Image 1 (spheres, helix red, strand yellow):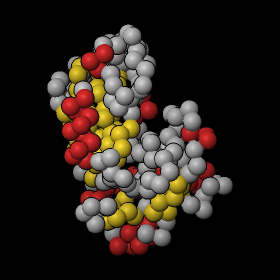
Image 2 (cartoon, helix red, strand yellow; image 1 turned 30 degrees about the horizontal axis):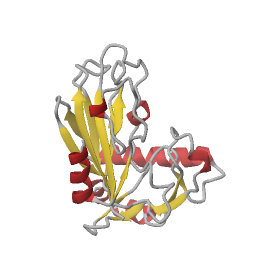
Image 3 (cartoon, one colour; image 1 turned 135 degrees about the vertical axis):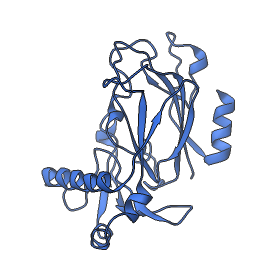
Length: 232
């Protein structure tokens, strides 16, 4: 586990989010560390830990509450499949879906690009976080310039994202974000990764949005180890 953390930090960034300082006695110590978050139902829970991730989102969970970090800081996630469900709730292979938001921006028509370039989003901590209500919001433009490649793309955030100016009209904010994301879905290819035990995948949350497909946790066990690294 430690070698994985050193590899991630040395390769991608300076600050690692996730994990716990306290070991769970009911989970193998080989699966736990200060920086590794366990997704799934490692103790056979019927309510999987990552249920919130079945919605399209970008993993920016630690950024709103971290002073000095821009919402579009380079944030790379590594996910390692220890145990994989035999199928999802639809009887299909266990899958995570990804969308490239730089490609999504390129696929928009000129008028839509110009509209979005005038809009910023207000980001709160994620809705599943107990401390989200106390986290100051951060503002970031929808049309984002990638920190390293310099390419323009979309940064849509998570389900607590609100367009600036719509803070007092949450229904309008929700409708705007849903319509925008439907436009993205209609024009952007989706990559579906079918998981095999032992897979390790990486993605850049500055550019990529993703979601997990629900599975029956009462029937199957899933264990995935997540390591998130941020470039300061």
